[in-house]
Length: 353
Image (cartoon, rainbow, N blue to C red):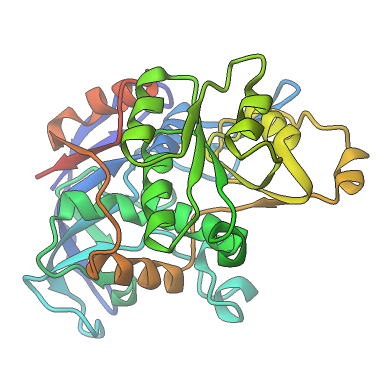
């Protein structure tokens, strides 16, 4: 099998030829039809996360071993199964839920939240992922039937879809169905968040991005307003777009000091800030202002397997309009990752067989 791997952090992906594995136990071997290229892959390629104040979270120090095949947005066809694999069929297409836990910790056993596992086994991060022609899935329960839907369109739901769906769940339908929310970032996640918000009867969204092309894409997708986050009066523009009122909730898909600060200054007392993005840096707010404004600041990391099934029901029912997807051959994995790193991708970039 062909795999495009990170061999050294911050170096070009390398093609490695490996023997195609044979599944055992509950394992399922999937022939990859589509693999999304996600912004999170950039952080993996870089080898860590910016923690602010000169500190970095090193993936090497956290036990990540190279070479590693990235790719956590994967859809493909089941081609082989271990003897204990149940609930899937050879020849059918499935979306792979990649946020797999250890199966032993309280998050996995008591809460069924693999994505909160303390010893994660995420595909494309801790185990080889979808930048390959095959991927091994450790249990059939992590495969969601997609029927005749286009794998390239469906693959991004494994990350950008489930991540924004879970963030909206944390905002809560009682809030987003009555009040517009602010979405920081109009890249693939931002456009996905807009569509999932509309599918759930949301009151609309005010989108913030520094890129004019991405702001236009957000307006084309139905955003109530698209605001330049670098504008000196960006907070005032957000409030004006919300009818002159401070906003109830912000979903920050960037996660930078500038975006979280802008969110903080736009939120009503008692409002909610859900931080998804991993751009990095240190929090810019005065700590005393958090209780004074009675803000809820929540981190949101992907979403649960149950949420994945809920989201895919919306997709199968035709309630979620697909975001723009740009298909590229698997052999262009490094070129596409570079384009994403340079901010040249609008919508989602997907590698296809």
